[in-house]
Image (cartoon, rainbow, N blue to C red; front, side, top):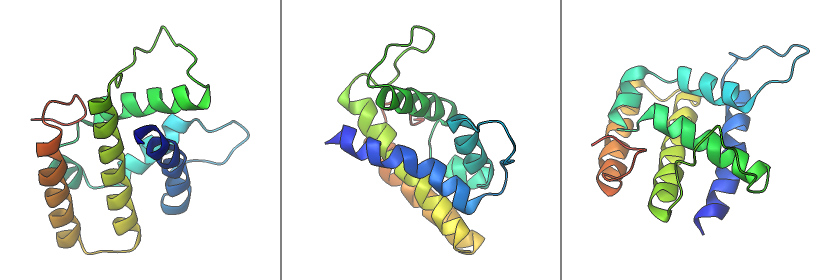
Length: 139
């Protein structure tokens, strides 16, 4: 089920950021989920992200909306419209999240830049075509 996969992937993003990136200060204030995701995105090469064909603005907005929906058990948030109300957008969100996590893991393992570039390009071809009608991927 798509929701089960998203429930597993969403906390993994902040865990990956903690393991892979040192961009978040650990001071007295509570770190927001959005900061973890932002730092993870910033740790990846812009060219690699462009190859994925993921619309990062729409992905992060849908990701945060999904995370809040799951964390707060479907509590409505009138200030943040739901961006993935159907199965198609949920699948696109799931696949884009997998792509970002895969690239972050490869980068953390020290995979050479040409290999990361090729991986991001291939993942963009694979999922970009599948989700061409989605707001999460660019045409």
